Image (cartoon, rainbow over all chains, first blue to last red; front, top):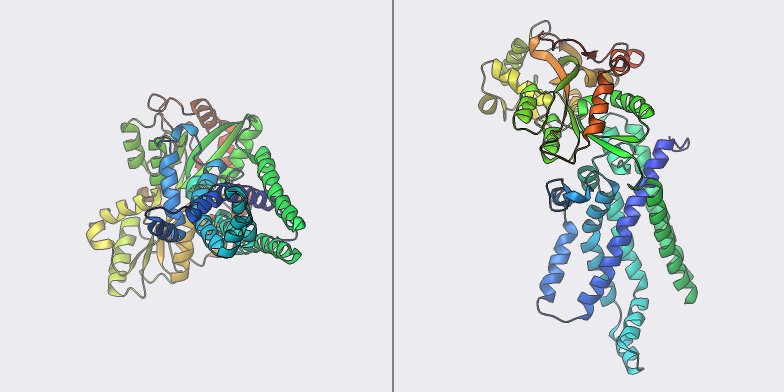
Length: 216
Length: 295
């Protein structure tokens, strides 16, 4: 199964990558600036906010699925967009799912940068923007780690994919929902092969990350 | 340092290109019309819908048929919200209510088969050769006496099969909610037919299954069909498109085309033939042009 590369398995794998990478992209575009703002600004309730974000790391995928379902359903506030049971709807769900974890780990990544660098940049006469860039650059590996973590959560989840996507063959069926379906049909071999494919994707991503770090 | 930054930029660029490229390839922006159908797992698990879909789409290349397979209860809920264009279900009481409430119109019955009461070949509750109500009574009596010997696995998910199961329990004179649910010999899975059959097989328990799913899964099961006929086990499938008065945006044109196709000679022939090669017998009996069977 793995070797013969069944065209349906290939399509499902590409679709899974498409959806999870898009969610990771949108999640990152929102979360890293958001995490940066929370880290750099001092405001009332910051501690509470960080606590809330950390609590949401455990956001159940099924809960996100249900909330986004109600949002996108024909009767819901965004029903007119007709995104329920589409890849677009799944991307919205997965993006929401990974926002807390990427935002939280962005804050952690920035906290790891030594204060001296911030002070040094300022004392050398950097503008606020240049200082920000210096700090971001210093934290880039940890930030990349946050993105990988978000991607990992997006590609491995099944709750949103099942509830928002509906597991429609040839349209919203992804690796995890196919595994759930095939297992329920008793096709254990196919499910295991798909699980291996998912892990290989994760491995590829992790190798790329390590290559970047070694280049340093 | 610069090579690092270039590398990161390159990766970001790759992600963007893949995301955009994949959108162009698989995205939801094509000129195709989508026909969304909420269907029961018992129809999808047999593999018959794939064949129907392929035949329909080759005739209507601009229509993309999309199945969301859930239990009958949930399929009708999707219909009530207007999230699909058509439902294909099998629980007449629930269907009648759906139509009475004005969500759907023109219920069309298209095929039928029978529910099977399946169980271990040793048949510890002695139901072989009885009818549905007697079988359920025997299971209840033997299960109450020794739950480790006799147990019953239920879908417990408000599906068409579960609805039928409750009807049969109530016919035995026992009250479903007070004297069946929660008993040590009564196990609810909350899952689809395939999962429920697999679980019943693991536990050597009895269960109620539509015959189509049972035959499709037979190869993986040691359970055997013990009671397979009678009015109480008749399983009629129907299609209900959404009511356009209530849901003006529903894709009723393609839903009508789908119904016409399923009821056409070509569509009905698929029901008549499907399964012969794979399972040695047909899974469904087509119903076009016939009255709804009563026995």
